[in-house]
Image (cartoon, rainbow, N blue to C red):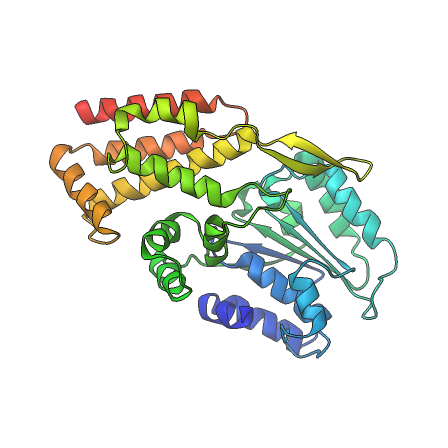
Length: 354
């Protein structure tokens, strides 16, 4: 159950939520902050379930019809907004305000909205959010999530109860992933890059993605393919750029997006998919050079062999690790992704030949 997971991984957060419920002093606005993979979204869902739960215990039962509808995003008095793949705009915040200016639709009379990746809201959205928080409606709870508070307006921070989530060791994710049946190879790589068990499952889910989602399983599959080719374990490194251009990169991917009139429209997602593909590749390369530097003896056999080969042929691993970090930071929707990959491969080769 989610509450058991949070109790184990984030005991301080768990205790804070239990005490708030026990003492009847639930805040009108929470900000859950912490690095990726720290079960912030799971905690937000649990808190929303606890507010609506039919059994009205301290924390949600997670099993009643109401709890199940909250988890599925089907509760009439709850909204979820994510800035993971799209910038959060003023219109998005206005839509939440409009919905919750009306009377609750369900019997509890309570309303909840969750905003994930609040740090990706633009300035207008932040200001609109601030005004919303300054005049909280009765029986309305805001649950805001962000990886870092550095990009959140101080005035928003001052109006929220902030609960920090501490990082979880990759070994914990690895063990949990293997228990849940994820192949050890994928469990090792994704426990170091994906950030959470939920994300790991999404990257491995071979079912057709929802139209509103990017194809995460294909992103990981292609990133792993490029990673293995870079290590000369499946294909040749010197052919990687050509293979990426001809067959690996995403082409003709479209997703559904809501227009202002509420209707769906198809938009190209090629660049977003390729951006996430390169981010995942650079995360895997960073992991690899980190493991080379530390002399790690974990991971699949072919990976351990690649680590030993790299240690013998080059002493520039620190520089290569830095390059992987720098190139990852350049991956955004405004930069030329093909140029970034070309530049990264050139810089890594130059570092090896120094």
